[in-house]
Length: 135
Image (cartoon, rainbow, N blue to C red; front, side):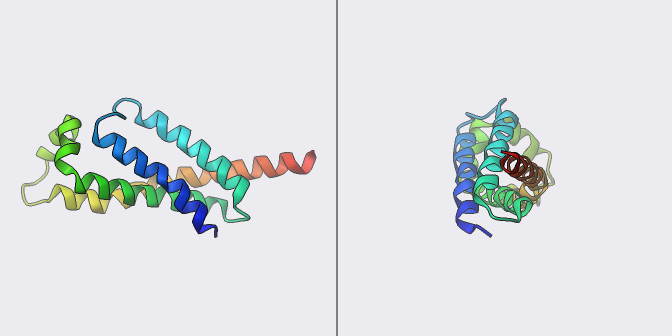
């Protein structure tokens, strides 16, 4: 496992978490994540020796952790700049702490999307290695 690569790629998750605090990613976040996943896949295919899927999966889980910590720590700023989140939180049961929910759900969402990031990385590795072998 290339832990340095996993950590370095996850820094984009920190950037995304900070950008979303200010509402800068509203409306374009899904597109940004697809671009990030393609970038992750290419980097992992180039730098990892094996376990391509697991590298992509772990980058995404770490992203979920970073983002949930950022959103929970700066909850009032996040909800101020993302009013749709505040509307969703208002529908939660009153005894459920939204910050705690963010901290629990962040890694789970990261794991869910990690399946896609891992598949991107695995496919990129197969494609790039096949292409290198035929050259």
